[in-house]
Image (cartoon, rainbow, N blue to C red; front, side):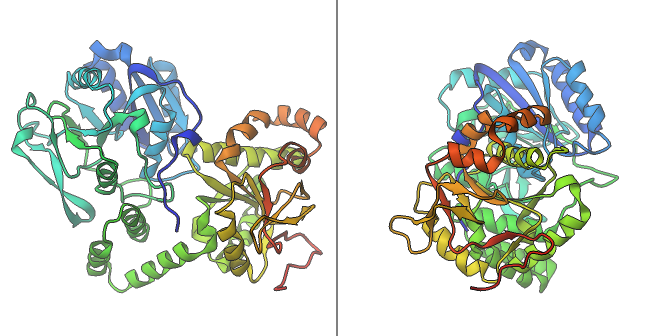
Length: 487
């Protein structure tokens, strides 16, 4: 499986205002936690209100708390509401850094309170270290407001990491010092120094320890700032509203630790001890995912028009046979009476999400797509060659004017697309296509009056860097059309 550092250049450009700080938080159906964290920022840190933006990322924008959270944008000065539902889990915090419009970013859980004066002192530190590449954290206070935890020791206990205290962190006026790792209830850095979570992580867990190793590997430090004190609501009497899956968490650890060169044996030993023999199946699934040719792409997006349950179920059966069902993201496009507009809007939305997440490439296909029986073999040969090309679009379906790609035995170049039902996009074309394709249904229908259809637009306006796998591996599973068989 390809792992990488998310590329800042693939995110939508934003003006990072010097000398200012974004305090961002991701929330999933926790209005009370978010409300009190936001209001505490305003109540207890008024001296820096003119230098602080608040970014509220709602990871459940269709949930029961969404309306109330959205309303905070109109009542709390400096607060911006950002709905994100295409990516679920704690890794969504990566988007906070990409969406921030300030030079510095501090990410906090939506149930964290900072001690009075901490933000002012942090901004003072930021002003004194304008070129810092470090990851910055601070001690967490227990509910007695006296007991201090400065770091985590690298030991598994449900999650990776057990709280500990370095005496150097007892005095808030003590100088900063290096730590190995800490919980991610609060962490900060310059926006352009953020190294990012692995974009393939899913669900909850896996970031602690891994992100800290990533900074040290890049030549930066992980510092504890003793003045940057905070409290965290750990108790959840009614439980959490999002699923916490042990298999998914184990997969995150394997994925993340392999990325930074950490030995995965401690992960497997812990989960074998706590979960038993089922871990062998988890490991086999992870290895199969790594070795699948479609693991080349950072995301697999299945367009499900109208949110059709039947279409999604049919796609699921085919994707399970292909061995990628767990990786596929469902995308329900904006509705339109014109199928051409709906298709174009779906591709635009997939590209916007990929750019927001910082993905290097993404495969977008429709829920009616069926793959030939030997698709894995065909894809393995083609995608190995694609990785060596400077490509913009790769078609898994039919294409016109095919020619062998230079130096390739399988991959072909093409100057004409006959369909857009299974297309891969590289980050190099995100900005260009998002600037050209309208985002609203009305504007898209007017755009189609000029360009007729998405495939025709691509054929005329994207002549370079367009490839097609050979032989074709994807067809539209429509009534009366036979599925491709092994050639």
